[in-house]
Image (cartoon, rainbow, N blue to C red; front, top):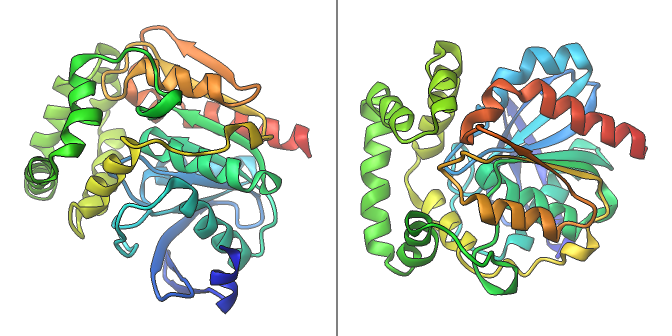
Length: 306
């Protein structure tokens, strides 16, 4: 696959927004946060989400000498839409981004729906990944890697609805309209269906504002990106987990209501040597108060590996 990007992908910069133009003309939008000359880390946003998600960690990254590179996946924000493809395909695009930035090895961090893409990169390009951190990750739902049991609501979301694409699109269209037109109401909805520990986190104005900004930009172009990703998650991932050599930490709140905890923990079992941190009482949005802890931990692993 690497030869497809040999047509020299190029980067276009416009203010803080950046675009990687791939050899086939598609675009990957991204932003950078932190120190321009710092230790590079690819940061994968959730589903839906955008390049804005990690903006809240900018000051911390500057202080710690980290260069956070936050790419958007197909159909989100500035990135071109593409039909659902194998997860491993995204690894080629991230390799092309690293090449265009002149980066040989990176740490990676994946949050929620971004975790499968971080794992795909680490499995397909193990020589390029120095360390990996996964937070509240979506785990596999199909094939031999899937957990034995998930709850009925998550079974409906990740196993049943992907087979009814029209209904999926209707539900996502309502959600998109809500985020664009009545974001405060959507924030209240997020809080109402979250774990009690998440209520306190999402009630903080700065945190809520950053989260909503990332979600609104993610769905601004449409719902295609989110729909295709959830369809992708519901199929066998077909990743060579055994190829992953990067030291990995996985943080999972045991009160998470957004992703199936059993699938997240199963993902930790599949990654060789993964340090799984089970956090009692924590919900899906634990990361929004713990960016510093996560980034510092992954950075430490990367520097130790180096």
